[in-house]
Amino acid sequence: QQQVKQSPQSLIVQKGGISIINCAYENTAFDYFPWYQQFPGKGPALLIAIRPDVSEKKEGRFTISFNKSAKQFSLHIMDSQPGDSATYFCAAAAVTAGNKLTFGGGTRVLVKP
Amino acid sequence: NAGVTQTPKFRVLKTGQSMTLLCAQDMNHEYMYWYRQDPGMGLRLIHYSVGEGTTAKGEVPDGYNVSRLKKQNFLLGLESAAPSQTSVYFCASSYSLVGTEAFFGQGTRLTVV
Image (cartoon, rainbow over all chains, first blue to last red; front, side):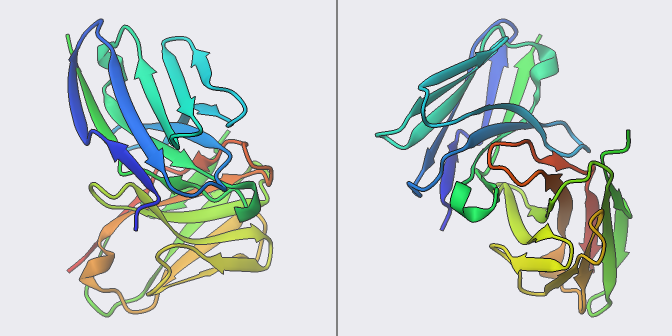
């Protein structure tokens, strides 16, 4: 079973628009929630991450919102740019499980100019 | 600064053949991981290692073996390749603390015919 569910699988947004990707998790032991960005032919790279003691974290145009009671977290990309076109993965890890990341299925984002 | 280096980058195998994928990291990370990436399924953990000489099974370990004889290297072996092992394989490494970034290699695209 997939412990981290991600939606949508793909989305298209106009330049300057907002991209929103949602993830839900089941394991309440998870206590680290990163987002990774992957360009074609490359390995994933850390974009932004959050711990469950805060409800929101912002870095530039990227914001994570976290809802512990609902076991959900989301990535918002503000003022989306064509260079943001990539596949985004949410992930989760637990301190009791050796930093092993459990990934969502990924969202392919296309930003149209 | 090489980071995480995977060899080879591409490989085509016939069913039943064996091969070894090599991962090398130069960041003195304690933890190393092997993931496979398949469309719509995100990245799934095959095996991981929390230190030199230790390995453990991940989510999808069947058909694979690993070894970590040196801290900087993590080898993934396929003893008898099957078409179901056609995938893109990623190696990653990180420090041991939860919440630290996992660095990924560029990937190995493996096709089993």
